[in-house]
Image 1 (tube, helix red, strand yellow):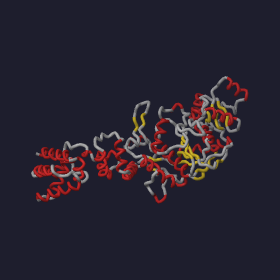
Image 2 (cartoon, helix red, strand yellow):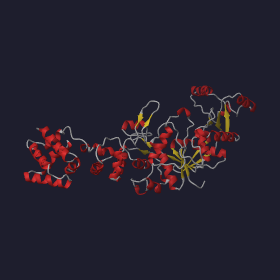
Image 3 (cartoon, rainbow, N blue to C red):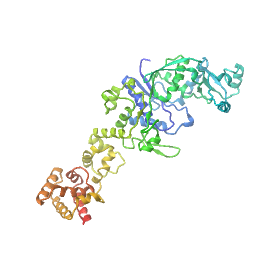
Image 4 (cartoon, rainbow, N blue to C red):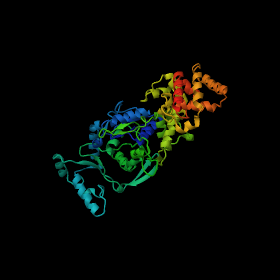
Length: 501
């Protein structure tokens, strides 16, 4: 296999988890770095756990992230179909093929029969496994005569196809991230390859699909490490060249041990899914990064560094730079701990990198009620974005630009307002009637007023800010005055004067 071809193969059993996004991203970065192709394949053979709308969710999430597949169910490609449920005839052909080798057999044991045997083992303190030590005592084509097998098949007796694990072989396994390891086949059981409904299990279907789709590298989570021995033997059984494997470490919860879960997100107040997901069964909505105000560039940058470090420990990397730098051999073996604070830091950094015009469009496309002309909104963005972590912070931290205060901070009022203040601000409001509402002019007007009255700047500036904002916060007072305009500014000052009277 000369050309690099990788695949991301999620099951449509629910929303795409943060770990799934990282797998897809590393697949994409590796493929593009090597001039290869990235394939999206939907592994939907688990009909019992299928969730309506999950496939569409996965495709939309990847698109939002900028992880665009070269081939997919939606896009098509030369190895279509890209849904496992549509590849049954291909699987049937290879089922026939493996049954002609010494690596597979038919098993007629019912679930009830196996439960009885399992209970007998447990009663003796043992654990039952369908493997090379027990298979010769069970109801399968290894123990039954050809006539008995054919009779059961003719009677349409349900059966599964199992892999016949070799006896006492040491398998030398290679992983790009984790290096070399070995496993003895006596520790592995005879996994089901084809279920009694004729559909292959994950193990067999993904081997067939990876071969058919000419996949050169399989990048997946470490939960699949125990299956590497079986998958290696399946390639051997089919006389196919195996791809190279790389198993990614876990994304760890913020505190304590274990894998990051939705429960952790609920507990610590952060999403674990890229987009909002509505459970079709319950109607419950799980919050997504997109709807929480994260920029896709920030989200992807954060995800990329959960397990990989670029050269010089750079942290801000646009997607195209990640592609240039990504090296699968430098992906970490150890788990990466998720940090809500770090994810917010990334978003803040990318907010600062956005132009005022870009943020204007983001805010206008949001669900915020921004009843203000673009020119003024651009000025607000310019003044407020420096402290914003999310686009909505520009609005929420600068709400006084959009609506007059209805109350005044008590602590600030005691500090800024005394018996003379109402008179001072009342007179200042009068001078504003004939002042041009440009920031520099207003700054000079405040200075001249204070000087003429023999007042310190604080005697004018603090109560003026309180009148305009309701608190002692916000950007420069002249900038606030210019944006909210003459009529609104004078009205707010008069409201404050009346309030404190």
